[in-house]
Length: 423
Picture 1: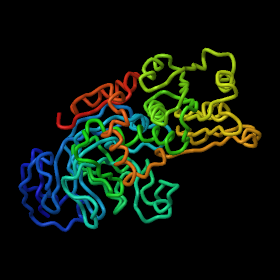
Picture 2 (picture 1 turned 45 degrees about the vertical axis):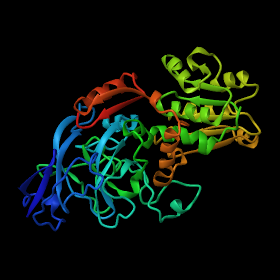
Picture 3 (picture 1 turned 135 degrees about the vertical axis):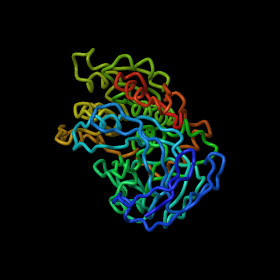
Picture 4 (picture 1 turned 180 degrees about the vertical axis):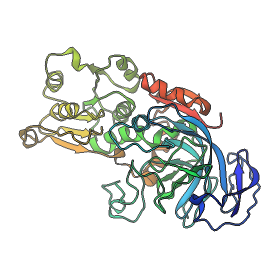
């Protein structure tokens, strides 16, 4: 079987893939194409059934530096789109699974799930996206058909809900990435540490083409998670008090949500005092370091706020912090929202009287945002200067130096590091 291979920057060559079983499901003949950069050609459409060769940062082993490789990216199949990634960023979730903590390791793999790019081509059945669209790939999806997608209260799509163990595409279980015919596993259905990636169309949010992708790419995960936890779930009223447990990127996004909501006092809780000064830029007004107190944190906060805060948001994944976040809200009307993901064997314990005294405990996934429906609106908030994104971006590196981004995060030096593809 002979197919055309497009190798950035878009040179055409014929390659024999007869010995590569991962491509057997294609019915392909020789194809030709004349392509220009997606940034300058909004009508970009690759020739049908073409494979693109490009650079990708491949994780071959857990905890080992990513290796820049030339990979082959197969065409999008049914309900899939192929995206040229222009900017991506590193999220702590990438780091967690790269270190292979708490789950079955799956390598080799292409990580990455916070990114912005341009649709290069679409597969069969895709009608809401076309080549040239500016998009954000999302780690979770919205099929539009299941009960969750039809519900105004849920964003937990039955088909496209986050799956950290899946290494191929939903359509056929196959990977769209390969090196010398050997498949490379996907991550969260996005794998944005590649110059081109293939994503299910239900995990792609079409956004305003005027929005700067090097800024709004961070909207596709952590920022929306923290922001929505406050605006969509906790819903503080103007002037109310909010406690935020954990001042990493998600916690700071929660603080940004509290600022937008008009919260009065915003109390940040963290074990790292170095984070306190940075958090002031996000509207945090007071700080509590549990290590500096003999009392339990919930007691400290209750004394600070005449009985407890109106709302709290937990962004650490620590069960102890979850208990503290719940027990520090005021009886009668207090609402606590859990955002952090605990270890699978953890258990939450509190006295039932805390519920009987009319404290409310809620959980949230991705800030209760529906990816395709709601994420474009968050981008518009940034474009309308309602949402501040620039302060989240503390570092930037070229794609060739992506391992520096991992170093920054491991050292706790960055909130978000933007990685420029093709550099």
